[in-house]
Image (cartoon, rainbow over all chains, first blue to last red):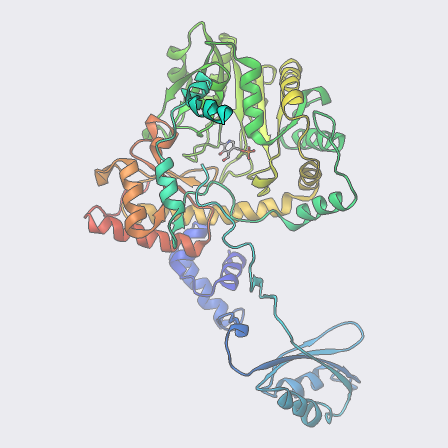
Length: 160
Length: 405
Ligand SMILES: Cc1ncc(COP(=O)(O)O)c(C=O)c1O
């Protein structure tokens, strides 16, 4: 039941406990309890909107930064990751397998700010061997939502 | 010039074959035209999945085109598809259908037409539930037969029964044409009732044409495949499809399986009128049968959530509605509004821009009801329910209705 609730909320964080209860054929009180507990236990971290920033004429750039690091004796990659995620510019920090180690998603007002983040904050960290910065050019799909869905409106209005 | 003036003298209407002309033009055509001309409408009138076909299925068809697999196929379908279907029916229902008992068709639509044409002699009667899917009666009429309606009602969840059918049987009765889960009601039939119907059909030597296009869309229960019931296999033409289970309505593919003699007769018509089903669609169907179950299950789970939202929502705003267990339709009663189903649909569309299908489009017994298809996004469902509530409140008709489970 909890998993089903989490799946529904992951898709639409604004569903009410009543709505969820109807969809899952259970009691509202049970859904409320499970959600409250999930929030307390940190299973649900926060509720947010998926915004189509491309439609908003606000200066903002996104970059994906690959970081190669030398793991440290005891802390492995964690210590470096922690140093990096403390910077507010870093929205997302992930350890990944492959040719680099940490993937960071950064937002800033312009390219200059990203460059400055990389050279002044990221590169000097001990253990960081090198970085590759990819600026985001266009977004096609965000969190499962296709941004410019060409198929919308293709359906007939009535089918018996 | 002379030729032109001659042509103008011909009244083409007089030349339409009578059995076609006699099919009454659908009264709701005007309603649909009106709907088509309007913007901002939330349509609960679309009887098809709101998903595109799962991508792996589309890809299979794309690669078939890329590989130049674009010729006619054997009349009854490509061997891979017939084999895969045979396996599928064995695994799902433990039914054995040999190659000679399988015909791949242009949807259940074609399969139904073939079955009617293969079985019906002029004047033969075919028993059909009322209300039912809009094609059943015309298919019988076009085949030269006479549809005989089996009345059903909400109190009995729009189920048919042997008792209801028996008095309608005459020496002209040839077949039963039924389909469960049902469009427009969402009704599924209890196994025992179907068993009695099969028994009755056998007593009177009737063929059962069973349209099981919605077989994959059942909730909180298992689908009863008529051909699996005692005594049914030998006299049942079982029609099935891909449209609803795998969201493949536009591919136009389905199948008929049944007694070899009937399938052979149907294949004869198919061979001369269709030749073969589009090749890419057949390739796509193979992929659907091999690897489509995960996507189908996800879609069914999603329809189920929307079903529960729809039924509760309708009851909450004052439209009583039995809980449908199949397909993706709710069929609420609008009798307490005092409107006919056509007026209800028309006024709702004009005032709140929500489209539902008047129940009388599906037969006389559908009067007093409207069909609401919940295969649309939850966001639209909630919005539609809100608009419908406003519509009902204006008329003082909105009090929470009884919630029949
Ligand atoms: C009950 C019923 N049978 C058959 C069909 C047609 O199915 P197909 O797409 O396989 O021709 C439909 C489509 O709406 C339906 O509702």
